[in-house]
Image (tube, rainbow, N blue to C red; front, side, top):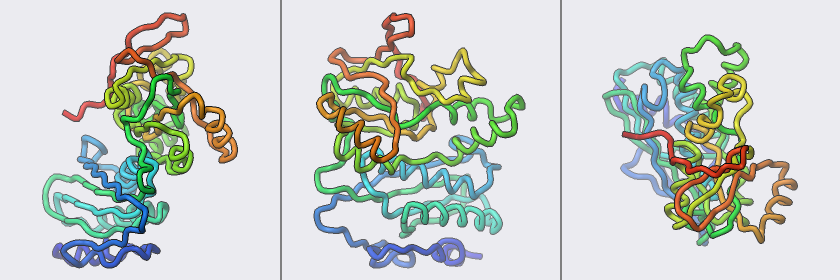
Length: 317
């Protein structure tokens, strides 16, 4: 099977219900209809075998994770994910692997009404690069640089579970049920697209938590020329992290990464309306601190002590 047959069999066959793809796979470039009043969001992520995922994982799960982490970037900017292109590097032509990967890709795209519009395949060490395109109303994208002094800092869900699974991937102490739960957190993160309209209405800044809460929040601080103070007792640590790593649970939550929840800021004057909107949408987010004038990160311990907090997290190099 050559490259073009591979594309026809495993990727061109992935269907989409979108009517804004003028043409896609099969030409040198895709052509898309961009609605009036919308701006285009573009983001790229590369996942490398045995760096971002284990090479022996089920290809279905690898495909799911690759899509989800990209969707999360669009969600962080209050956008709607629409189209992806895929660059796939494979060490060999493995049709069984490709069949499972294609099925996981198709299921993930269908879930978010995404269209696969092109890409590339080549031989080499296993890696997956996805470029995702999304839409956002003109001037409504939520960036990292919009936080204001006194804004409240929120996190969209409990964190630390994926990091625990990464550290304890071969640990035999987990119960079978807990291991399944933790692996699901790692392999199938849930991008918070459900918060899109609420972020658009109330958030001044946002970022998805991929490298770790403290590291990613620090990006907001630097971009917004502010600092942040977090409250230890308010950090929403996943219950399984507390169960298996009680003494280090806070470290996993603050510096673990791979959560793909959102961290965002809301002005105090809009907080009441924001909380009401969450209740109406049957959603829950966690207040963890506030933006302050002094640069850097700080943590209020449960003893009342205020201590400096390092921006620790995943290092790409």
